[in-house]
Image 1 (cartoon, rainbow, N blue to C red):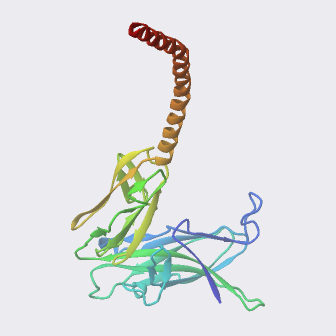
Image 2: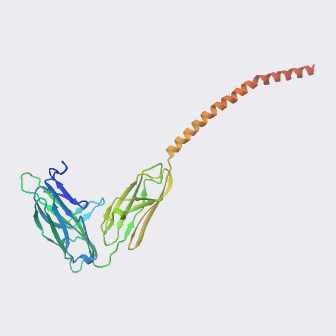
Image 3: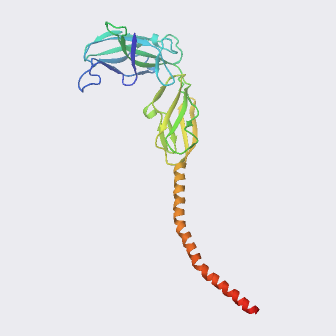
Length: 315
């Protein structure tokens, strides 16, 4: 049995004829879920949470709602794990847990959160899976299609948003031109996830420019290496780059200094300058030699006359 998952972005799963075909032709299977994720604050735990599921395809869809813990690997990919740390999979009650959607139909799904009496303080996470089971049919491979929406639940208590930034690394200390790559390590030392998305993205500030890292979310206790490319740096500069992020324990900040000096272009300019100098110097040198040649016979005649005068004086 193979399961196909679509997580977070867009939260739309489209399969079948028309999925990428002629405009206006609905696919056989197209399922959407909103919102794409849910963040539940401590004061909202006792409130029912809701999702909206819609069938945009041409065929009816049977949907089964499941719960599973998840983790995130170093690249940001979500991994579904029943024994994931700080999983809240056992806290959720879903109504309805299964249903059928006719083509074009929508249905709300209600989620009730029931944490244990004394949960660990901080945030717990769970993925709500909207699964369209594979239908009956021949063949050895069947495909379950599913959409996973992460839910972040913070229990009452103190909240720590501390983050630590590792060394800021660049493409090199001395560069002959762009682009320039920046890499750093971000450690979540707090008790809740941290979003670095859109306007709140992690940024490198370098000589008055802002270079944002790609969007990412960092779970509590996780670490991530992130990289961004500065595609159009100045032609030359002594660049000072800084990356910083604030949290409960203050601001974590790292800096790096590097030089952009286009040596190849400067070398080419020096060669051109030398060529121009030689071109201007050669005619002048030739003129000097020509003047020397014109003066040489007159000088020899004068010396000959001086020799004759000294000879006559001796007689």
